[in-house]
Length: 263
Image (cartoon, rainbow, N blue to C red; front, side):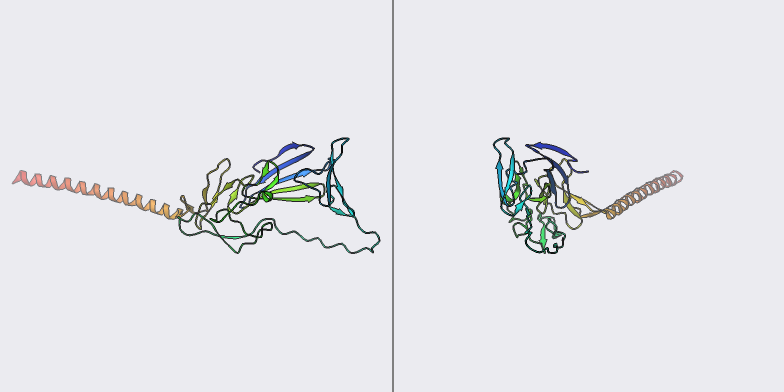
């Protein structure tokens, strides 16, 4: 289930639907549906090729498009009917909005920062962003703000207009979790775990892979169990030896007493 399974929020003349899934790169997914709304433009969600105009009669907003453009966001180009028909361009799948990186953590416990190798550059800034780096800086507010009072703290807001609705996403930088990318998770968990934040928690912890335990996932579980069994066996052997030694001493004392008695 998602962190917020479904929240309907009525904002002005449209509905916003929230849903979020916590992964290595968290995204807050917001859909603004304008299918039954006559005022698609608002602050932060401007028209593509036109201007937002407020009608005095009914105080409704609408996009006034430039020439050769139409649609609720002035994003549909009017075809030139004087030109001969041409083949439609092939639709290709868009690249992932998430930065892809190979993450390598240090073997020691003192280094609390992740290292990033062969990073794909961020599509907005052109630079790979690692929130756990010493040189990390917040993105500009213009990159993080979807609209007023909705800001991605350690990430960026992605807007995408699809037909009659707008798709918004909070895409978190590396090492960040939370609905609005508000939690940084920079513990060095070695090669046997990942830094994580539990539901309802704010403090990070190391989530160990199967077979490992410990604060930094540096203790092998089966080795720990083996050591525990060995210690238990040694304690039993020691107790048995002490018991046998005690019985032997008692027999020796009895034998000595008998000798003294008959002498």
